[in-house]
Image 1 (cartoon, helix red, strand yellow):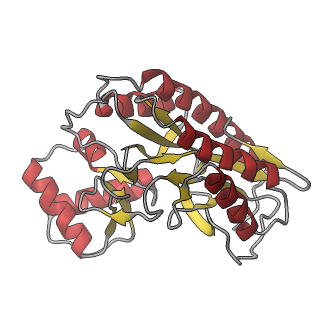
Image 2 (image 1 turned 120 degrees about the horizontal axis):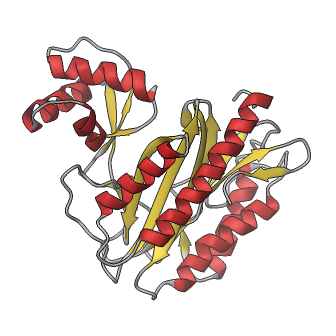
Length: 302
């Protein structure tokens, strides 16, 4: 990871400010009957109106869905009064990324689990300092979640952030670990505890609406070549949603689906499958981004 330069520091701070406002917008608008697609588009438009760009499609993962869910372009899904919704948002300015998430409990039944993930984040932030090992942060997170009677999701982690790379090394575990890699001054990290009443593991589902560009490959499909050019130029390796392609390109559903299948087969792009806990269980998430300074940390999203 490269150290953040002075100019980049100001971009990270502005990105975090935009994201803080976007999270407030999410909290205001997640309510029974609100369309998921409408919420995501509203937040993404807000980010752009404020001078930033989405670092990845807004994720709205409900109940046992832990991560990587964003609605399709033709989604009719709405929030219900029993949903526990995790809204995960990323903002970037010239590749300087902040990443944060909030959980909204419309059911009113899972306050203690919200306290577990939010409390774990606060404990991790209190412990975070230059030189602390990431495994020690994981131990802090695990203790706080278990103290509330829940399990940390052990195969979801926080992460480093680099310019144009939303998920970089090192991983910041949500359980105790012997990983002695340290938080380093001049670098950016996302800390994101997940708590659950399930088994503490997530599994990949079949559905994927989010993709990431890997590299240019020879393609038979003209539509595939156009998609490849678009995502390389516009997103520069950051994740994108299929629904974004629908807005930007004129093509039939058949052409788009066929082209995406070829891009995946050629390993020009990769998918981010939805990540799920056990059916009927609940997952809560809390996340923010920090910049590690010489003697302290700067919380970028508040």
